[in-house]
Picture (cartoon, rainbow, N blue to C red):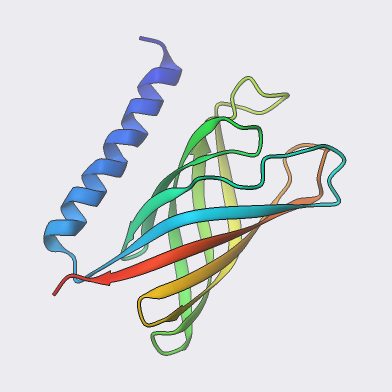
Length: 154
């Protein structure tokens, strides 16, 4: 088995382990239900609907999505966040890594990222927006919008 497949299966395993363990032990789980993006000053055509699904518990989030080049990818991050409006609005910074871009242009198999974000909820429904600097030269940055669902399991 090559290193790409090993990393892929490790990320998938982490995703399902987190999903199962949080479902059994957590007070609150966040789900990412979908994502769309906008490539700022893009000079190429990109996939901007990402068929995303993810789960988060406390400050850890994992997800899978179709990346901007149409390839299934996997990401995991640690969220450092600050509440602006109690239980409704947060700002923060995501620090993580994404797998699934290897072999596309000059991208490595695993790419680290640091991305500022804002997230808001009305009851259990929410949205978030994060900004990623560009690795390539076909866009200046990527702004990603995510639909979210917050579940209280008590």
